[in-house]
Length: 236
Image (cartoon, rainbow, N blue to C red):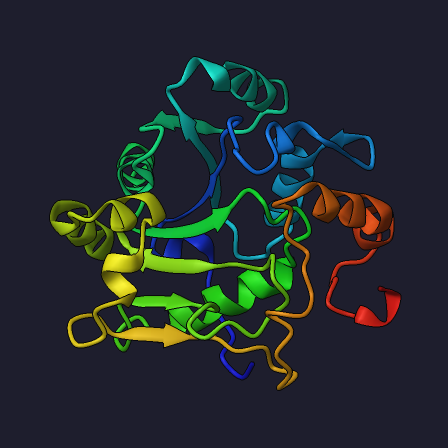
């Protein structure tokens, strides 16, 4: 990507990466605690996100449900900042995590992406920072081209607050950002496509939603952990 940001952190808007996580997954309960290379999956994912050169602050946004007390313990044991919010209203949870963190910009990343590529995070952030006057919302999902499990969505707190105030449908509250990207006539939506020109979004899964996903990721995780960029699929 041609856009490159070389500014100190204090010259950029305060950007908080929010990893949404909970224990009570219906598809794979307790997935965040499953071991990857000797550590819980959530910790491994946090390490991947923290390897982003542009990462400023990272917050795990979990729920107030007592089921997530163990998740909070895990965060405290590993020095990971966390926020507890609404169990089902993800829009409310993201917005209030941003308010508590004093964020100007929110980066939304789900916790089922343990092998997310730090370079992908940086490329989407670079694009957002370079085009703040052009776009209200930037992601690599509309349309998606990166391998599944590299989901990055970015928006200002101002835009997120509008969605938080106005979203009424359950789908909008549960998935945080549909109120924004479903309204291109109102919000300027930008997208970052995989620079290879390929589209692996439907054919290559690095996301952990089901037991078979975990078995695949567990099998190859040690190889992935040893390299910075995980998008060289010659090793798959």
